[in-house]
Image 1: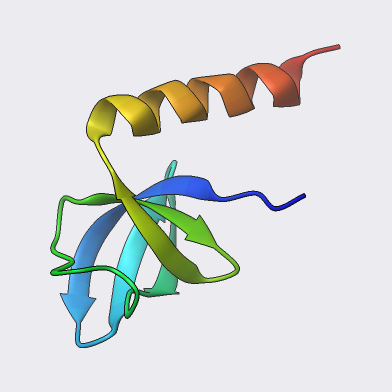
Image 2 (image 1 turned 180 degrees about the vertical axis):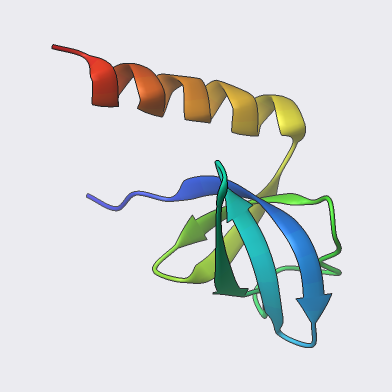
Length: 72
């Protein structure tokens, strides 16, 4: 099973981007995304942005992941 996490692009420099993963900033490769720009939400898998998603999808997925993580 693969897991991709929603992140927000902060800045783009060529095929690299700085992304925010729920407060954690990291580098990502955005070469698979058409016209990536700051403010876009993408799914990040193994350091690669693999799909653009909208803000609502990102929020819903992050909420589900939070529920799973904190479930006892």
